[in-house]
Length: 351
Picture (cartoon, rainbow, N blue to C red):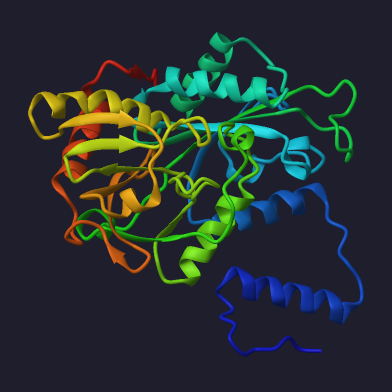
């Protein structure tokens, strides 16, 4: 039986999957693949990915691989089938790793909250991250690393005797449309509830609410969403923090007791003191922000390690400020980019 052809472009991954499943149904058998065929098919799969993966360290393999087809995890790893794992991401700028120590601080805190054993000391994991970056040869991009409780069963609790897994990936990084910075973003109030504080402050691999929020936003024709807590205060965005400039000129950020403590947000709050000294900002506050106050703000900002600082110009049906990117967003972006290239939080990579 032939697969339906309507609304399917054979060049898309979805269409290829439909064709493959149809072929298997028609033959009545499933192929039993050899190891060579598996590696070949994994290579073909990776060739279609939009992100280029440069180098991958696996404590389970005991080394680094540069062939994307070999950048794999066991299906029974507890991080894969139960979401029992954590991750973090550091930026790679002009051959230097930015703010790695702050990210490792958060990584270790997330591990403690998730009851995950460490496979090595902080210094040893730091060394693996730096050396894997060197092997990648990449001078700009992103470094993402994970910790899992390991493979061994499909149970809810980790398998007895399972060794924790530590993984490091060097890739080209995420990019966002130029219009986000020139014209600003549009966001919506998500219909999905914000995570409970324990899970929100832990950078775990379970991002289902965040994924659903982002999918909802795209379906609504906007760029992202915003969580609101049970008390009617602003939470965070899908995988980024939000901040505001009040009518009085103060930079305000939601408290970090029920949202993720973004390393970029924490650093920007420090860098922003220079804008206070220059009279660009009237002050800096970290506190609860009621939705009504947030909507009346002069500027609204999206903040994260990959997006850096981007202006939000519309929230639901309401314009923020005059509906155009504001000066504080641009000033903070400049401060952060300068810090990422010449600040005191850079680690040179030994290529």
